[in-house]
Length: 431
Image (spheres, rainbow, N blue to C red):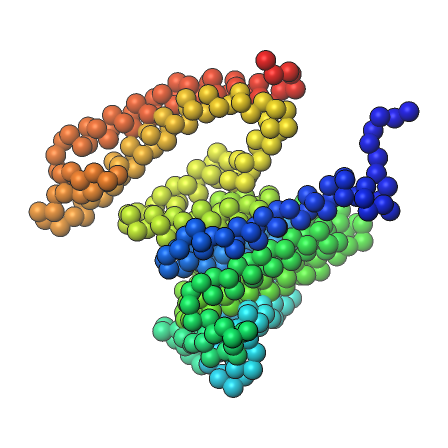
């Protein structure tokens, strides 16, 4: 008699015991609870603004990952779909009579419709092939629409963009969304709904076939599936959710400009998605959270935040091609084998000195920037809550020593960490 546990799909009790429903719903329940509780943890208005920006970026990054991660289509102009959705929502805001006829939470749907409409037009000729051809077409379309935003003033508003007022919408259960906390819960609802819908899309036959077309389009064609139409459907769906992100941006900031659809914005979302990890559904979520924190919180501390963001992106691509999500998922086999404790001491001995050395290197970069760009007579600078004279030798010697010692210790202990990692991933028993 076989000892393997089997379940009868026709019996709901066995399905529940097998964990199918529980394992599927639990992450979403936890996410919903976290979204509801975060305003009680981070109570300031600036924190709510940062979280709103974070959730909008999450939707946009997940939409972009529908192309890159699931469909293998590298786009250099995907911001135009979010931007057009945002501009469309702003025009609806300014159409007072029409805008007053429906509640504000419905507005992102219109942004999604306009984003999908533009994607239907562009996708009709851009999705005939993937790879370099698709990438170059996306870049050309992005540049064309970004240039048109300055010319077609009636729709894009020229260099000043278009502004509006979200409070003119029909009250939603008496709520006119005057306060930032109300906008936060609206954005949180849409990020949860959009993420769930995009996840469900990835489980549909079209979503599955997008993976097949990404990996081997010739074989997909041989099996009877049109690679072009699979790419087209994914492209339109991605444009829809990008438009939703643009609509939420219009609601949050009540202004949309050319910056929302230019090449720089497309490059940022590409960076965010790669940083989080294109091979995992939750990768863009991690990338959006990390990048938004760097862009908002770190930018308040230093003018070189973009340099650090670029360095983090470069290090991720070079050493962790799977992104931050891939780095986390590398540890799943270790936990399944019950050997995670083998890595605690090696991590402490290697990663802590490495982090200290990197902070020392950042101090050298900040001191160099201050030394070169500070006004004459402005010799004092504050770094790591310490004020000192950057034109004296002692701070430079301390930063050099911290950098050299920290990185040297990390390099010396790296072989032991590598050996511990090998032991933790082996199938032997834990000693």
